[in-house]
Image 1 (cartoon, chains in turn purple, blue):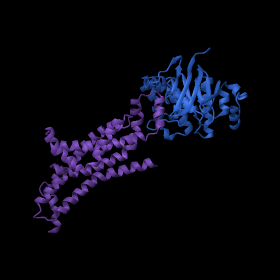
Image 2 (tube, rainbow over the protein chains, first blue to last red):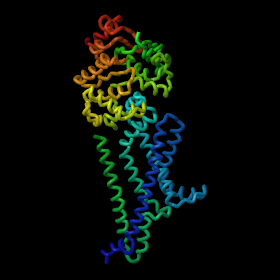
Image 3 (spheres, rainbow over the protein chains, first blue to last red):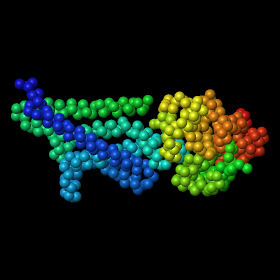
Length: 225
Length: 246
C-alpha cells in the first residue's frame, strides 16, 4: 500500500495542476524581473549622478526594500494598497508590483556598483574623443557594467524565483498553494502524500534554479581569471 | 607666421589650498611640436589635461585658434573633437572590437558615414601595421599594439592638435620605438601639431620645436628644442638632463 502513495501525484489532473502552479510562479518571476531590471537600471544610473538629495532618496528606497521582509511587502500591496488607494487589481498584478519594486531596489545597487567599478580612465578616454555624457553611458560604461553585474543579477533572479513560494499567502495559486490543496484533499487516504508532493516541488524549484546558479558561478569564475 | 592653434594665458590651478600650476603661459602654432619635460609631479600631466577640459583650472584662459574656450561641459565636448588625446594606459574600450573602437566617435559624435570612416580606418590601420587586427578585441593585443590603435582612434577624428600624455611610459622597451616612430612620422610627414609629455629624452630632442621645462607647477624654461638640449638656461634643467642620463 505504502508505495502506491506516489499515485497521488498522478491521480486525476494533480500533476497538470502542479505544473500549472509552477507556471504561475515562473511567469510572475519573469514579469517582475523584467520590470524590476528596467526600473533598477534607471535608478542605478541616477545613483551615480552627483546630486546628493537624489542619491539620499534612492538610498532610502533601497534600504526600505532590503530591510522589509518580502511577506510584509506582499501584505502591504495586497491588503493596504487596495483599501487606501482604491486600486482593485488582480492579486497576481499586485504580487508583480511588490516583486518588481524589490528587484528594482536590489538591482539599482548592483548597477551603481558596476558602473562605479568601470575604471575612471575609460570615462576619460571616452570624453577625450568628444562623446557626450549620454553617449559615454550608452556605448562605454553600461556595456562594461552589464558584464560586471551579470553574476549578481542571475543570483537575484534565483532569489526571486525562490521567494515566489510566499505567493500563496496572498491567495495566488502558485505551485505551493496547489500542492497544499492536493495534500489536504488526500490526507485521509494517503497521510504520507505530504512528503511526495513537497518532494516534487523541491525537485521542480531545483530544476529551475540550479542551472541559473551554475551559470552565475561560471561567469564569476571567468571574471576572476 | 603660421596659424596659432593653442594659447594658454595665466593659467592657474589649485587643489584646495595646494597651488598646482602657477601662471602658465605659452603659444603653440600650426605644425609645431611642444614637449613638456620635468620631474615626476611637476604638473606636466595636469597641464596637458587642462587643455582638453579633463581637469578644470582655477583662473586664466585657453584659446583655440584665437578663440577663448568657455569652460563649460558642452563647449569642451565640441572642442575635444578638434583636440585629440592619447593616454599612458591606452584605454581602448574592452567591450568593442578594434574597428568598433575606431568608428565609435566619428560615427556617433561627428555623424560621419560609417562605410567612409571604415575605409579611412583601414588605411590608418595599415599605416601602423595592424590591418589584420580590425576584428580583434583589445584583450588580444599587446600593449604596443593597443597604443597604436589608440593613436589611430584619435587621428580618425581629424584633430588639429594631438595631446600625447606619456604614451610610451607603460610599454616594454622594444615596443617604445614603434610608437616613437609613429609620432615622428606624424610630425615630419603630416605636420601634425602636438604636445608631448615624455621621459624619452633622445626622442624629445629629435622632435621638439619648443620645450617647456616644468618644476613644481612653474615653467622654468620655455626654449626652442635644440637650444634646450644644447645649452639649458637654468641649472635645474641641466641637473634634470644629467639625471636622465642624457
